[in-house]
Amino acid sequence: MNKLEKLLQGSELIMADGAMGTMLFDAGLQFGDPPETWNILHPEVIRKVHRSYLESGSQILLTNTFGGNRYRLAMHRLQERVKELNTTAAILARIEVDATDIDAIVAGNIGPNGEIMEPLGTLTAEEAVDAFEEQADALVFGGVDAIWIETMWALEEMKAAIEGVRKASADMPIIATMTFDTNGCTMMGVTPEQAIEFLEAQNVTAAGGNCGNGPDEILGVIEKMSAKNPSIPLVAKSNAGIPALVDRRPVYSAGPTEMAEYSIALRAAGARVIGGCCGSTPDHLQCMHSTLKSIPGDSVPKISRKSSTRNGNEPAPKRKRARFRRRSDAKSATG
Image (cartoon, rainbow, N blue to C red):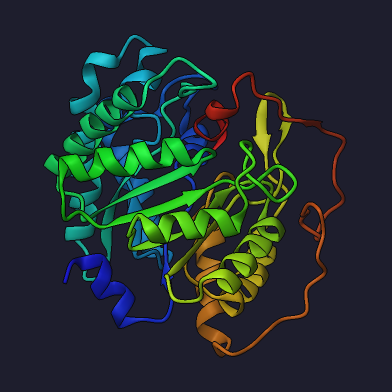
């Protein structure tokens, strides 16, 4: 039994971590710069972020490698540094997990490759698989316990990512999540029901949704996935609301208390792994963790279902909604 399976067997609920990019922006990362370079330039900052999430109750740390494949790195002329950046990221997370007595694991984070696959685009399935295998191989070399594939919109790309991971390590456990931010579907029209059926057939260890338009949206995704397949461990890793640009920085609308409220509803809906995506911080995760521990597992809170979320403690300022040139770049640019 691998470490991820032991975590799932040992507890009904596992806390994942929150956003990496949000924390790096606070530390000085500039909009548009590749976060992966900070694994080399500022390893102490990356380790501090991991440590903060462990201290907040997280048991799954994602490496700082969301855009660490050759195609995304090529946007910054870094495609020759795939192994260096990914392996270093895995080592940094590994150091923090091994230094604590918390029962936690390191998950190598793999995001979209940034290209459109055939037949809509020019990237072939073989090219996509090869790129994902290269990234996964570097993460495995660095000592990850699992691979976390996230923010996928197309089943074809998800299949290529899973195949690439298994070519790198046949027995590596995989967590796979898609983003449902277009009228309840992914940008490519995949429904939660279709996604969970596909991912179960791919024999992943856990599956679900991440990123998107906030916790209310992810709750609907988990409800639909659970109704379709209640047996596979479900994952919910939502953005902290919808981002808006304030002084050229993304600001998210859901505070720690609101995210904690939704975490109770997510657990009741069937989520086994709960964390935060873009905009979430250790404060969010700490509040979510302490709330989940303090409220019985069979509690179902009454929450107001909304199309978007806002921290009710303060009025919403006038903001411009964040717009991104490439949808596949949105998470790495903000989260």
